Length: 630
Image (cartoon, rainbow, N blue to C red; front, side, top):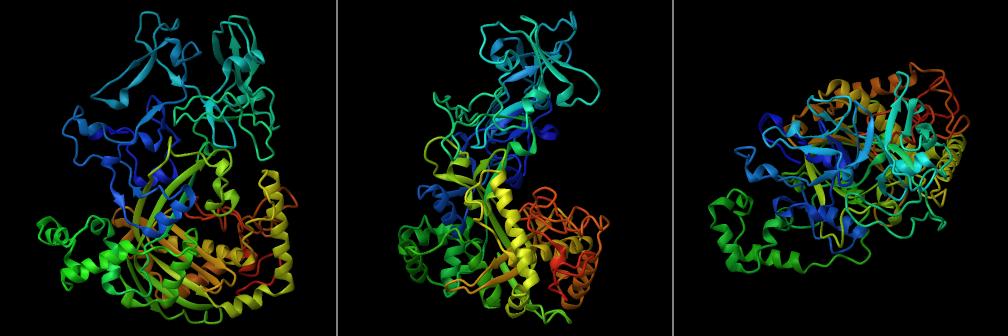
């Protein structure tokens, strides 16, 4: 999507393309609704490559070894000089979707293929491009009426999407009626209960509320024919099936609804490789450049190129022979067969625990400081990250069910994950952001003692039962799989209360402060993990202003910890919040937690505000469990 000057239409930040408006997502433009097309139709030549080997390995684990690159969304190399400049058209390709339009004046509904609507492009003002109803009876002799997209679609749980079956819906099934449909609205609420679709040809009508039958197998909805509008593929002659091999029916959804598109993202911090030399780390950080070096002659040419002198300035202390030898070693290195590339957090945990300033790079600069006074019994280590770089990659998306409902996003089954493009993908969309953060490591002995308490074990069984019911209600098998445990509940709840407190003081908005939870029982070589990283990151300078790191100094952090825990003791929704049970009054995945005390924006939380309970932190009105911070 592109535009020009002060009238840029569809201008998105790279992070929005990964979290909100990625491949297969619908975007509302001033007069149109469009869908982002698959990456096989993107102009990859205008995409900048991102260097992050760990993230690329994790993507390959998900999508296959043919994926060789992580690319940012396309953008022109220079600012277009005019709206007719070819560079003004460089961007993500989109198509009109849904294909059905409605005239707001006469309420006529018809597909684009009917010929009743005419496109009125405006190359100088792209924001004024629109479809018009050419023969609206309510506007005879006047300017043509702008048509708007219909606001109802159908989707299935395997990621397929299609136009709403208007003709079949009104007539209760296939029909030979040459339908002329109108959308009639009664009342002032504009809810589905007030919307009626009427066929003027045969006088049949049906209320839209019938399409939103709470029963999943609604007979008025068609069987899914495996259509992906972002791929423009042909419809299957068969039908889509669920995990029990039963045909899936489509479900009615609203255009632009939050459940119409959920991204599946993988993210990794750029941490230094442990146990390597300074030269090896520099080659790793600049591998996108050195990957093109196939001989010492090319290396010498690069060293003599004025445009690359600033990039190669860190290599001034090394001669060409040493650099060439390290490039060959990097190219010949083979990953170990037992490497778990999906485990992106263990290498980060090791870098935080080591806290070696000698390993600092331009993208990773840390400083270990003293644990705040009074918190020695609970915390083992506090590390300030003055600089960090996070790379994120989009590997697919889901509809109706969020990827987080399956646990970690890499756990989404292949049949539930919609593809990013036709054919075999050789690259995926990605983005990188830079920022700062504070890492807090919990004492393992204190945590193990707390986890062994009978009341804590009882609460863990309660969360496990809620976890089972949640997955069973959504047909996610096996129900007990991917349960994070009470270690995660404690760390997650702590991260949320601390994020809320820090956002009040650090100068960043609450939606800009994020968490990264390191929670794992004893592993083969890494040992148990128990820590949280509170950080902020942005594609511009906002993520490196120092406001968050400044709050991590021992005395200041002690104040924030005191305030965060004190605020968690009482919620404005108490006693309802403190007495909330995960599944006694409806299945949820949180205990004493709500929007007034613990919940955070979706951009901040790893698990969609699930597995939270402030009772594990401090004493609340409900004394059902001994808090960790006694």
